[in-house]
Image 1 (cartoon, rainbow, N blue to C red):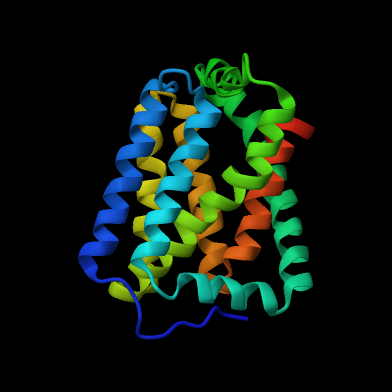
Image 2: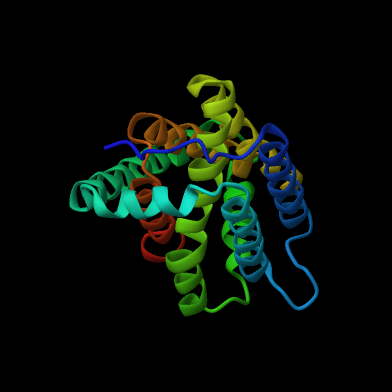
Length: 219
């Protein structure tokens, strides 16, 4: 069931400001990966909390849309989110095998992504992914940015621009495999949102996939 909205939506400059804020913060994150005492995971969680907070402040109807989303067809959305997470995981498993045969840099790129876990406890990463990073990324990227860009520019443009920005911020990492992975994820979750317009469904999909990839069954 689509998430409803009303006239209390952010103006074009407010949306542009949130896009710029998200882009800037995540470029810095992927470029430097550490901010003083904050490692990658703490810094990512902080970025998401900041951008989500600004998004809620800019979009006066966002909280109401999320509450409605949670109240309508929750079991179905959870099931679809779970199924889509396993589908995306399967696509990544197949893509990993293909990439290792095609790209000479694939193995080092994949190892670099998993290297982000070095020095961070599994329990802390699990909690951050499950409670903040997984759901928060969908609240920011699809629930706010794709939703509001789509309202302003049309659904197709909202989807394309959000997926593009989502992939581009990962370029700062210098890791081609991470950028390709982000591009696939951006298109996949953007497509889910375009069809269902449910941050809850997307949050389940993103969170379960992230836990599978990083904690439960790393590839």
